[in-house]
Length: 523
Image 1 (tube, rainbow, N blue to C red):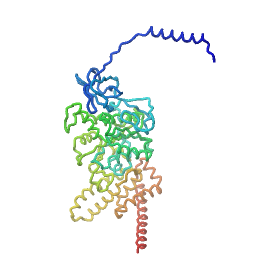
Image 2 (cartoon, rainbow, N blue to C red):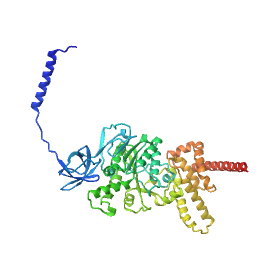
Image 3 (cartoon, helix red, strand yellow):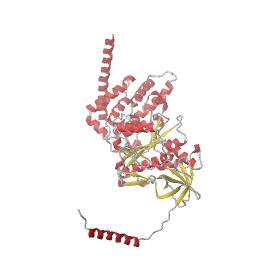
Image 4 (cartoon, rainbow, N blue to C red):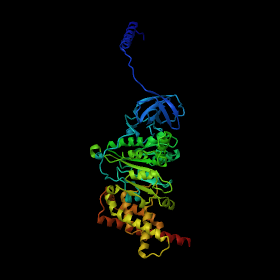
């Protein structure tokens, strides 16, 4: 194809004339820009001079696209928390202001993904395409914007749903010594939200890579990642990322809450978060206080957990339920960080190492655990069993301590002990096995009415499983009524007990026949 030379020349002339016109009208504009200098590079922190107008929590940029958070503002220098590894930084490097605070991407595209504290993907799902970003530090909703906590958040664990209930919008602390099952309870709560229209955010702070990988694998294996978001800042990450991780995860969760959704967020754990903040504060030469923590250690957790709430309907009616986790040492719940968190939250679930060693799992110490809100949000059917169950269990624990001394016990006391042992056996539950509300009610009602009293302890778990199965099959209408939150009437209560008695009778007789046949065969 042959081009017309005249047409081509005309097009080039027009283009050149346009450029000449633009250049003639162009006027250079001067802009004032602050450029600082690195004075000192330390472990996860940098001291910078020459940024007199920088604001608190503003992002600054170092060579190599390394970001930092302006944290200490003094007349002579700025203390900056590094959000990336700073091995390449050295004194004299230039520092630039960005004019914005640290923000993270938010939106539906985050569901099912694994990200770091900056919202960057850590999985193999490709880039995260969102159109909205929000700062990690946001004001908590005002008192007038909050609604009462009235809806339950079922964990699927009998001991928690019946005795230490959690409501949507509540902040319930989980604390206990190392390796007592704290994360297991949080994971069970996440798994129980499947098909309940509750989104979940799991924030790992300072954990080992292997521990985080195991949690993610468990969630993926049980198809829970579809309604979950995992935010990870492992112990290998800079202390600055570990510090901002829970705030970033909360901003991501708040997006869904403000859309009218119910969200559950797990902070695992805030002990390591507090240690990361202490490390940064000491490096920045902030005055240390009790246990070398800075004076505002209470505030960093209170401003985080105050963002969890239940919003009024005019603001969408969404909720953000927080399950912060704290690790105690030698069962000392009166230490500095645990007492701070206990005073901020609406209750605590304490896990006892003694119960864990005895094989009572989950190892929840009912006497030291409390929910200051959940009773009002508990399903009506639980009220038929919760009061008697707590009284029976507390009496059993008190009498069991005296019975160890070998004192002579009357018949009534022995009966209380036997029933208490069966209550404790019924409250045992394996991990990753959440139980629906109606099945919980049937089993707990049977044990407080004494129907399990004549069963050997070794057969309680087998009979319990049979009771749950038969109840679903024989009373589907009642099962659905309890699941929907209706109260348990006296007639329905008797119906449940009749089903349980028949099931126990047939199951126990079957077991006796099996044992008898085995004995005869051996003979």
